[in-house]
Figure (tube, one colour):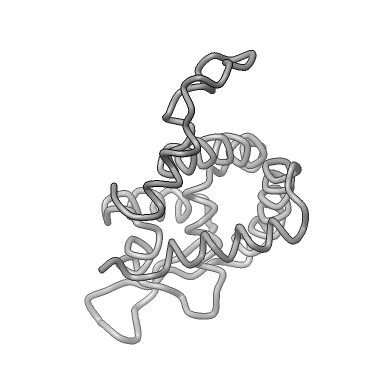
Length: 166
């Protein structure tokens, strides 16, 4: 890496700093944003999956259900693109949710060959409960941050997640 950002990363890693209780925290890895983001996602996903388990959902199925509850009734392709999953993963998730009576496939108004995914009444009811569980998991994950820091983090992540690469 080059430039000011790279220089700032270099300056944050000082191998002469004494190791804390966990010697791995002295590793240069803990200064790398991709590692920190992946670790935060892993911890947050595990926490959310644990909170969603009593509802027989996981983060991915919750995400599909949440989007199916919107007025837009997204297509399976739109779900795959938005969630950064391959279409076969979406098909499997939708199949499982459909078997439980939580979503239904309907004709897509924009493309007759495609199917849109819409939540059923049962799906909407489950989503309300699941949404509360996910908010609890999020609150637990972010408890070390202030409200302003959470808002700032949410804004930064939104920019990263939805700004086209180029």
